[in-house]
Amino acid sequence: MNKLLLLSSFVLVLSGCEWWEAQYDRNAGLPEIRSQADVDAYNATVSSESEKLVCERERVVGSNIRQWVCLTQAQRDRLALEGRENVEQARTILDN
Image 1 (tube, helix red, strand yellow):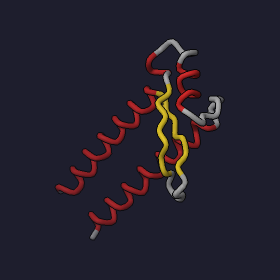
Image 2 (spheres, one colour):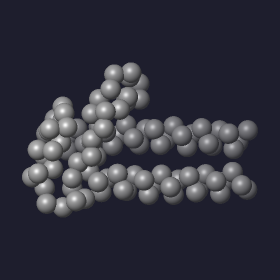
Image 3 (tube, one colour):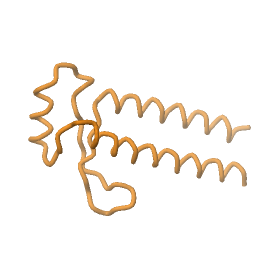
C-alpha cells in the first residue's frame, strides 16, 4: 500500500512539474506562440541549438483545449534527464 501511495505521489509531482514548466515559459519574456510560423520566426533569431524552441499542441492538465506548449531544447533535455532519474528512484524504492 505504501508503494502504491508513493508511486501515485510521484506521478502527481511529475505532472505538476510539467504544468509549472509550461507556465514558466509563458512568463519568460518569450513571444506568444500561435503557430509553427511563430516558432520558426523565433528560432531564426537565436544562434544556439539549445535555445531553439520546440513547441507542440498539447492538452494541458485540467483542460481539454489544446494549447501551444513551448520549451527550449535545453529545457526539454533537462526535463527528460530529471524524468529518467525520478523513474530510477521510484524503481529502487519499489524494489526494496
